[in-house]
Image (cartoon, rainbow, N blue to C red; front, side, top):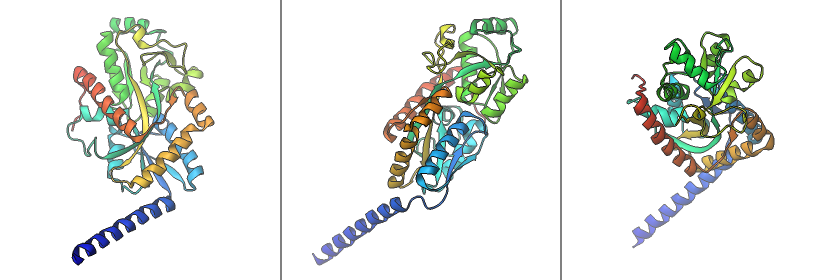
Amino acid sequence: MNTLKHISLVGALAFGMTAMSTQALAQSYPDKPIRLIVADAPGGAPDILARMLAQKMSDSMGQPVVVDNKPGAAGLLGAEQAARAPADGYNLFMNQTAVWGILPSVKKNLPYDPINSFMPITRIAIASNVMVINPSISAKTVPELVKLAKANPGSINYASAGIASPAHLAGEMFNLLADVKLTHVPYKGAGPALLDVIGGQVQLIITSPIAAGAHISNGKVRALATTGAQRNPALPDLPTIAESVKGYEISQAWGITVPNGTPVAIVNRLHAEIIKAISQPDTRERISKLGAVPFTETPGEFAAAIAADRKRLGDVITKTGIVLAD
């Protein structure tokens, strides 16, 4: 009996010490700079959102939040680095639809577990994408583009942030549903891809309005349509692709995750800080002006959304046959 009492006492002390340690960890966090990994090149939508969020969190938390761009392989390189980073709260990942909803279906041997490597915190923005073309192309509407593409199979190129990126999936979905043949040109990020559309090296891209908005406004590219089921509130004058290509719908989202095993107390702190940052009126206004919808949720809701995206986009990938080589 004395032995049982001793074991119970030791267990209670250990639990108490763990609870105090966790509480102390949360109170002292952060005590050094935080890294926010972005699996895209500077200038793309994830980078723009990351820098906006990083500034707000830096101001609130008293430590720098440093954006670390790791572009390549449609988000795979950045995701791998984020998954393998220490789970200490000092490594955040600007996760995105390509990583949680597309990569698991296009690549068999991922260098991380797409389900269990990350702990979701919250999505921060959702956007229907926008189809933009170089002004040298005569088409001013989607039906005109379809007519031009059918008359010249394979002659119109479309850019993407890489094989299996959302822009690649969007382009192949357009090929499938509009019964045309646009030629895919992959890049190592949305920023460089968009720059080559502006420069005329490639004719078209389906990308985030966050990245393309300023270039649409100054006339460097021409916007034809958006990709959601309904018109984008930030671009109400643009039709959806679905208005002329039946069944077309694809959007993307961005959210913050951390490596699995990050202490719950720190996850809760980060969740509160991100919600505070995104909820500020100036942040919401900036995101809305970029053509996206600011968004927050619980970690559980984010996890459910990830699972739903993986199933829905996986069905499209099966039909289009997109594969990312091992």
